[in-house]
Length: 139
Image (cartoon, rainbow, N blue to C red; front, side, top):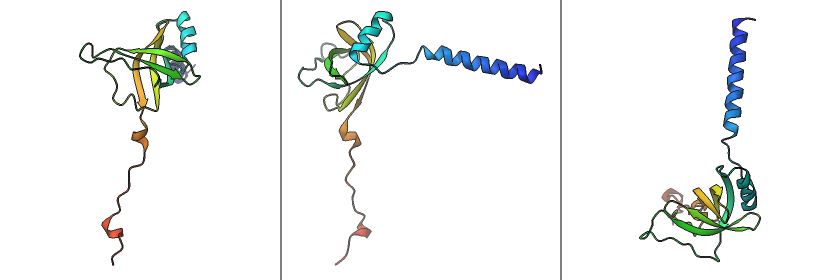
């Protein structure tokens, strides 16, 4: 076998090993029920849950008492509601967010979110277009 072929085989082996090694670190999108079931198998693995804020229940956040503790309820895409605990300050405009993506793990009766990504509808609305003075008709 030529040295070039050996080097190519080694590179392919390293690439396959890297892909297999990273496969375990990937996170899936699941519902709250799936996160509960998967937590029984591996309680330390994080999952993504797409949900929306439950407007029926209050947000518990007191920055004077503990600025790194937020509790709220969210409803996933299948309609299941779950208590969410977040160990960081409350994200800005959480109440106005259209959808929320939680990255964390199920801890039994609540979901512990490590990160919260929120989509606020006002960020994606078109800004009013001002007309350039050259385009305004003159009388």
